Length: 224
Image (cartoon, helix red, strand yellow):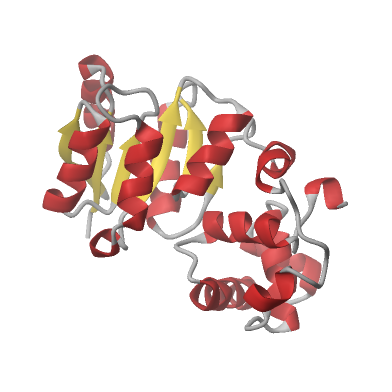
């Protein structure tokens, strides 16, 4: 089944370029185009896309607000948002993750990287560009950070020790393969622990696990 993609960008030329690229892939299709954030929210509701490729700076309603409205809508629980923007700075990365985005990329990536990013995010994994590093995310998400083992305990109490360990490693930017190598388990087992943690914490995807890990103090900037 093809990945259904909604394009949200105020530049028609860019939307046309993205449409040609995405429609050229055998496993995905463009189901709609939005020139404003408000149109993106409306079309996400009417077109039932699997993923919205979202620009940040758009008229009427910006991409971050549109992302938040989509992520907070229970009827759109299965819709993923991949933010693609020229303005790839740490404040936007943090805001995009807080708003519910599952990925954040700069528009300077090559076509194959963009297609791979769509596949990764649509599959439920998080994706951040090299510029959107853990340190930059942590700088904003961990303010203020609760003391270890105190404020974090109520929200994380449902997790097993292994699940907490996996969530912390997800927040450090490790893939399932890397987590498996670190914990001496299989990649499938690592993914299972991450998925169970997402279910228990009400996280939409791995990107939201990163947010929760820093907000609760389970993960800290630079390992502090």
